[in-house]
Amino acid sequence: MSRIKQGAILAILGIGTFILISSIYTVSEVEQAIITQFGRPVGAPVTDAGLKFKAPFIQEVNLIDKRVLEWDGNPSDMPTKDKLYVSVDLFARWRIVDPLQYFLRLHDERSAQSRLDDILGSETRNAVAKHELIEIIRTTKERVPLRDTLMINAGRQLDVGSLVPIQKGRKLVEQEIFAEAAEKVRVFGIELLDIRFKRINYNESVRPKIYDRMISERRQIAETLPIRRERRGRQNSRQSCARFEQDPV
Image (cartoon, rainbow, N blue to C red; front, side):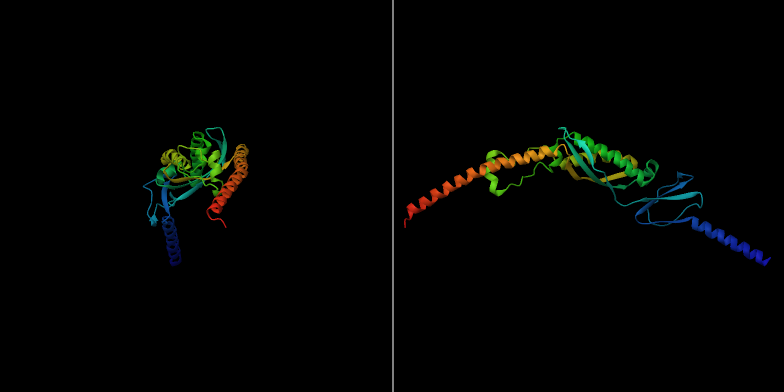
């Protein structure tokens, strides 16, 4: 009887230990948790770090990241308002602010990234389509062009190297994309923190036009250089003659 009692006690202790372990879970400082019972969320989201308890066996812990996460889109070709194609590469930063809504609508980060692909990609395409190429490429409308000091006069005379006036610039376009996308991702319990153009490349159909314009400008400047040298030489000669007449040897 004593052995049977000891075995029963050990069995009870083992079962109790297993139940206790199954009812304990931890949440780190960079995580939050949703408790589900038979697949349905129960109770409020657990947002505080520490040792927590749940009903064993019937409840499961679903950990959700609380850190700032990144979204890095794939480069995509899209048309501008003036029917020129550019390859746009975008990135964004986001975080989960409503874990319950996030869990119900998306469930996991993979689904969230997929939904961000759809929303951010669509809003970027819409924004690019509403602006001309120069608005997407130029950072701001206040930008001052850098000029070669040896060719400043020639550039002014030929109106070469001057910047085409714009209304917004790339930064304001980014803000438009952010405002539209932030509103749409909020229903998923996501807060969009920032969005930036990582890279904008000219499409193969646009590059020849850009290069032709650059070559044309340089040729115009090159054609004026001999004339400028001749004028400068005449000016130097006149100055030398004037000095000689004032102070003859």
